[in-house]
Amino acid sequence: MKADAVVGLVAIPLAVLITFSLFFVTAAIGTKKARSDTLKTIEALDFRSNAVLAVVSLWSAMFHRIFGRHFFSWRRAAAVPIYTALVSALCFIVWLGSIFLLRNPKHLLIVSLPLDFRQGLSQYYWGDGYVASLVIDFIAVQFTVWCISIGVQRGFFSLRFLLAFFSSLFVSGLLFTLAVYAIRTRDMESLYALVAPYDDPPPAVYAPISYIATSLNFFHPLTLLYASTRGLYGDYFMPEPVLLYSAIVSHLSLVAVAMGYALAAGLVRMKQLSIGFVRAVGKPKIGAYSVVITIYAGLFSVLLLTVIVYILV
Image (tube, rainbow, N blue to C red):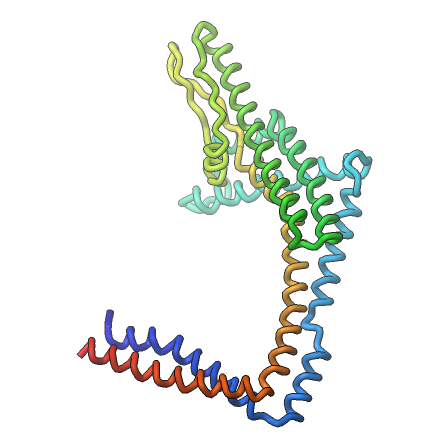
C-alpha cells in the first residue's frame, strides 16, 4: 500500500474522533442560555415520526380494506385471485422485457418469443402454477393481517411478532417447495406414461433448498429433461421463479409496515437521545471527559503518524 493511501486511511477515523471530541468541548463550554434554547428547539421537533406513522397507518388500513380481516370473507375471496393474477402478470411482463433487452442483440421490435417463455406462460395459467400461487398468497395475506395486528398490539420488536413474522416466511417457503415438488412429480409421471410407459421413472426427491436456489434466477427458469429408453424427453417449463417472487411480493406489505413502525420508533428514540445529549454536555463532568478524550486523541494521532512515517521511511 502506498504512503499516501496509508496516511489517508488512518487520518479518516482520527479526524472523526478529534472532531467528535472538539464538539463535546465546544458544547460543554457553551452558555447555559444557548443550551436551553437548543433543548427547547429539539423538544418542539417531532423528527417526522408522526408523518411516518400516518403513512404506515394508512397503508395498514388500505391493506385491511382490500383483503379484509377474516380468512373466510367474500372480500378476500375476490381480492386475492385478482392480486395473484396482477402480480404474476407483472412478473411475466418483466420477463418479457428482459427478452427484448437482454436476448435481442439486434434490438428488433418484433422478435420470436423463446420456447421457455411461451410454454411457461401456458403451463402457469393453464396448468398448476396459478393455483399454487393462489394458495400461497391466501396464506401469506392471512399471515400479514395476523402479524400487523400483533405488531400494533405488542410492538414490532416483540418476541411474538418476530415469531409470527418468521413463521409466515417459513410456511410460505414450505408451501412453495411442496408445490414445486408436486408439480415436478406430476409432470415426470405423466411424461413417462405418455412417452415410455414401460420405463420406471426416477425416484422423486424433495430438495427444498435446491428448489429455492434454482428459482432465484428469474430470467432463466429451470427446464427438466428425463432419460428413457426412447431418448431424452422433457416438457417441464413451469416458471418456478414466478411462484417464488409472487410469494415474496405477498410479504412486502408486512415488511413495509414493520420497517415503517421501526423507523418511527427510531426517530422518537433519536429525539430522546438528542435531548439527553444536550442536557448532559452542560455538566462539568462531561466537559472534563471531553478535554481528556481530546488530549488522548491528539497524542495517539501523533504517535500513530510517527510510527507510520518510521515504517515507510
